[in-house]
Image (cartoon, rainbow, N blue to C red; front, side, top):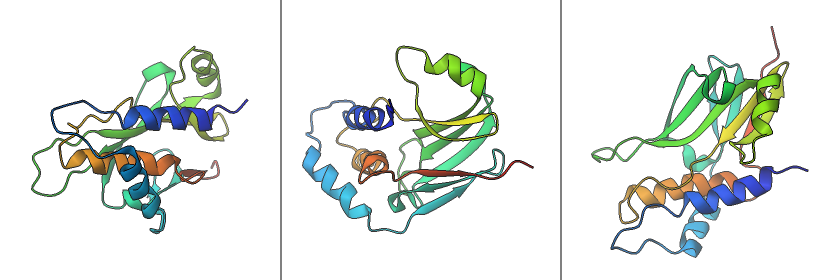
Length: 173
């Protein structure tokens, strides 16, 4: 059974239920309509210099993230690519994680995927590498902040309208 759609749906709902404060956030319908409109934008392409893959992201991501790649051992992975939200210029808001892609060996992923709670969804495989996307549990920005609706838009755009994220591993050399 493929749990990817269920994982994305649950993560999107949780990711958009960020910290609460006194000012009401936009409605779910407003956020979904905004994300649906963003589907008409040309896709954004990220090319991994370390892990050897291309990643197509929704066009709403253009100019809104910064990616860093580093060795990683979380859950037995060997590489992590952290995609951080880039607030508007002039904002004093911190740059916080949107999504993380971890690269596992097939053996390490077999152990992790047997855990009761999924840590991510498989985006692709190449040789012994398994590429796994992890989404946030919630929006880390206060609901009334200017960053919160933009962050929500980016996360929702990943799950709207079918597979909006596509990973293309480069051939092994």
